[in-house]
Length: 113
Length: 111
Image (cartoon, rainbow over all chains, first blue to last red):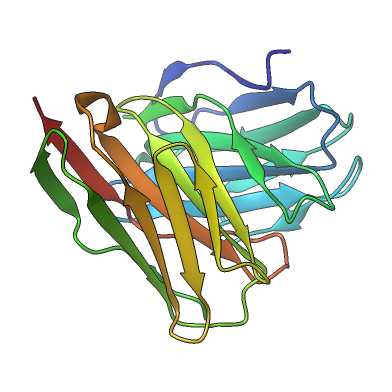
């Protein structure tokens, strides 16, 4: 049981490049989330999903897109990376009926030059 | 809009001391409150989750309490150890799936 995994662990991009971050969970959780963590800002919700095929905007969605084609996977895309998107990205998952307890992946450290 | 605050931002204590970490929130209409631990360069590990109807939760040397009316939660760590050194984060949700996080308290326990 791997829990929540994230790919890649590290990435360096140039401004304007695109990339996709992959989150996978093997706990059969309905809910999945993408957060970013910046110094002094705490974790902020980017997008989330309450089930396969559904997505919704969080607190800071601009510049990101997401897809949840399969229940176990939640993809975060950056179409045209900007230096302001340099951050650590965390994926989390949770199950309805458990008071929304969330379980986190190890994070992806992204640097945009 | 919910705001979550954790004070102090950093704390250094000698080994063996009992300590309290504080978390305050502005909107008392919460669904739950969750405490996490984050080690440097790592993800978040869930420590305790307190449902809105509960007053406290305990796990080993950890005890978390919740007072919705005053907008406060505390995490009590008994007999602190160097291995407890980490950043502790609290987060709450009003039931709309959106967690609001505090900025954390960075704890260092000195041997």
